[in-house]
Length: 91
Image (tube, rainbow, N blue to C red; front, side, top):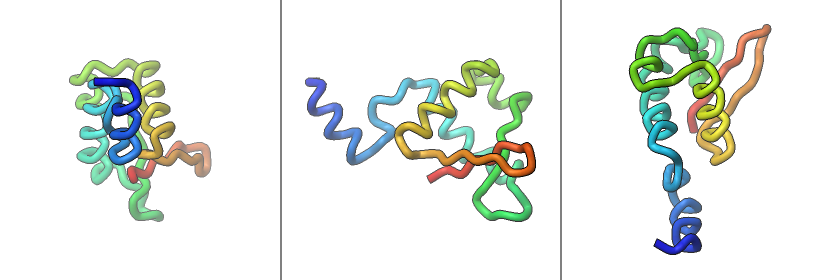
């Protein structure tokens, strides 16, 4: 596949071109967001680094931060800090 066509697909679907591990994280976040949701703001949740599901797909703390940043870069995830806690919102 030519690089130009990959970029065209990525504009339509931002999941195209992401590393497999980041794609797995995106799927897991869809599941854990219900469990770790912010009671005050619907759609926002925290991501506990100690969650066993994240460890099961092979994420270290550093790898998790890196994959979360990749999702932010392709506009699939928002991050903000509230009262010292990082909150995330999937798009």
